[in-house]
Image (cartoon, rainbow, N blue to C red; front, top):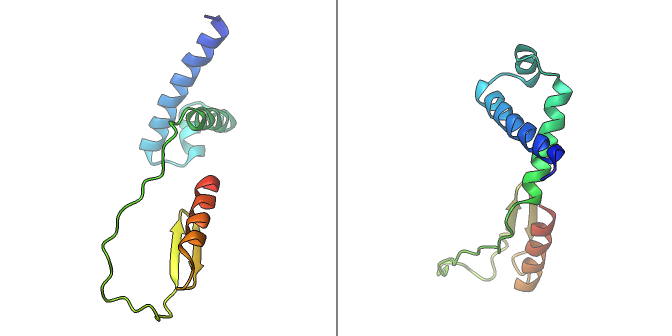
Length: 113
C-alpha cells in the first residue's frame, strides 16, 4: 500500500472526528475553528472531501414502496389535487393524473434528489 494513501486515510479519519466534534459543539463553524486552531477553509475542504467519499460509497438501494389501504370514502370526481413532496420539491397533479405519469415523475425525482 502506498504511504500517501495511508497518510490521506489517517487525515480523513482525523477530520471525520473533528467534524463530529464541531457538530456536537453547537457553535458556529467560524467560532469552533477559531477555538480549535483550524483554518475555516480547511474545515470546508475536508467536509467536502468526506461528503464526496460518502456519496461515492453509498450502497445502491432499490426504492421502497408502501402498500396503502384502499380509500373507501374517496369520490372519483373530487377536485382535490394530488401533492407529492420529496425533499424540497413539491409536485401537484390533477386528481385525474394517470398512474403512469405519477410513476414517471417519481422516478425522475429519485434520479435528481
